[in-house]
Length: 422
Figure 1: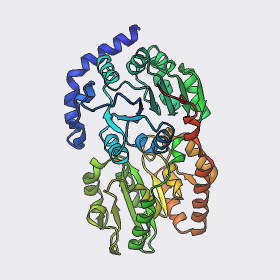
Figure 2 (figure 1 turned 135 degrees about the vertical axis):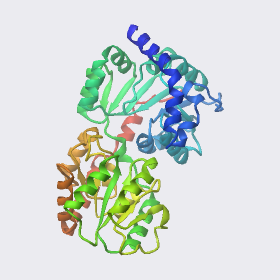
Figure 3 (figure 1 turned 90 degrees about the vertical axis):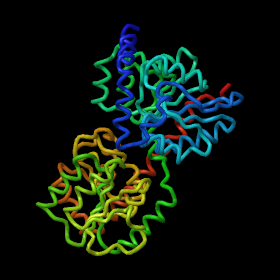
Figure 4 (figure 1 turned 30 degrees about the vertical axis):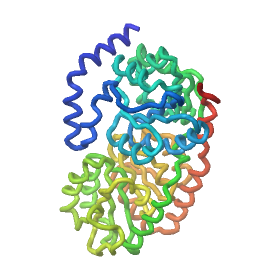
C-alpha cells in the first residue's frame, strides 16, 4: 500500500510535465497532440448503458494488429455486447480506428494516476477487461479490482530481462500481477516468470500472432510489386529501427550486394520515413514507395526502394526473396517474425531477438529462419541464400508449416473468459 501511494505521488509530480512530452512527441507524430483529455480520464465517447461493455487494451501498433483474431472471436461469442479498445500510442489508436472503428469504441487509456483511472472506469463501466501482453499498471489493476472489474492478462510474454525489472519493484508489481483473474501466457517460460511475480491461474495458451491471417489484399499487392520489380532478387530490411539502416549501409560498402539486387527498406516508425530517405539517397538510386504506384515497372537502375507507406509490410514480405528482421541488428529486442513466416518469407534474425526469444528459436528449429551474428554475417548469408533458390523454397515451406503448427491460441484464450456478462 505504501509503495503504491509513493507511486501515485510520482504520477502527481510528473503530471505538469506530461503535456510537454506529448507536444514534443507530436512534432513527428501529430496523433500525440490529440485526445489529451482522455489521457487524464475525461471522455466524451457515448456509451450504450443498455449493453454490457467488454474492454480490450492493446497498448501500441503491434498489439493492435495481433488482436484481430481475438476481436473477431469476442464479436462472435458476445454479439450483444459493446467493445471498447484502448491504446497508449498514437499509431496504435490510428491502426485500431482503421481496423475496428466501424463497430468498436476507440479510446486512449489514461496515465496510471489513480484519479484518471477511476474516471475511466466510471465512464465506461466495463464488465471485464482484457489486457494484451504485459501492460501491467499498479493503479489500473487496483482500481479495477475495487470497481469489481475482473481483469485478464492475455497473450502475456515476459522476457528474463523484463522479469528482473519487475522484481526490482516487487512491492508494486507483485500485487498488480496477483490481481488478474487469469493469465494466458505465450510459453511455459513466460508462465513460470509470471508465477514468480505473483501471477495466479497462469495457463500456457500460445501466441495470438500465429492466428493472425494475412489480409487477402496483401497477396494481391505483393504480386503487383513483384510484377513491377521483375526477376530481380529482392532483399528486405523489415521494420528497421534507428541506427540499423546506417549499420547496413556501412556493411554494404565493404560487402556490396550483386548489382541487380533490389534492397527494400521498410522503417518501423512512419515518423522516420524522411530521415531514412535522406540517409539512403547517397547510397544508390532511391525510389520511395510514396512516389511510385507499385504497378509501373520499376526502373532497372533503382537500387534501393524505401517502403514509406503504411499497412504494406505483409505485401513486402510476400514480395521479398529474403528478409532481415529489423530491431534485431541492434538491441531493440526484434519484432514479430510470425508475420513474415505466415506468408512464407525466409528470414535472417539478428542477435537481439530477446522480445521474441521463443518464437525465434522455434522458427530456427523449424528451418524457417537462420540466425546471424552481426550485419556482416547477415549480408554474407543473404548473398548465399539469394543464390540458392532451392534452399529458399525449403525455408518458405518450413515457414508456412511452422505457423500452421502453432495456431489455436485465440480459442484457448476465449475459453478462459466468462460464459456470460451481466
